[in-house]
Amino acid sequence: MGKTRIFLAVVAGTLLALASPAGLKAQTVIPATNRGQPAVAASLVIEQFLRAVNANELETMARLFGTQAGPVIDRDPRAQNEKRMFALASIMRHEDYRIEGTQVVPGRGDEATLVNVRMTVNRRAVLVPFTLVQTKRGTWLVEQIGIESITQRR
Image (cartoon, rainbow, N blue to C red; front, top):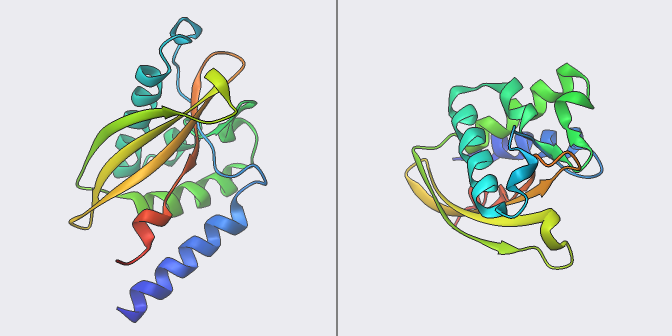
């Protein structure tokens, strides 16, 4: 139990150290025609991201993570992205997940949406909030993930 806490503290510290000032982020190829359907487009990005997590596809994760300016894979050095995505995948590997709903992000209009995902991680069900942002090109990226709900103990 002590080793697990130390590991989680190291991983969380690594994520904080590697994260850009804007936080962790992502992208997918959801065309601009989906602008009126943020919940559907955001859900597709989350599904792709979570598949990449379990497959340890770090490059795919980095393509799906970003800000309104674009994915981190286009912005940050490869080694930094690999370390960041490896740390995220280590925390977020899951047995199952279910998208439970979306809601508006106050003050951000149609540019961002919050999606609540019920994940089963290490046989424990946790509600993980994902904030997704729409880029100027019309694609959606994972902007933030509330991994604290996974790492904290009950």
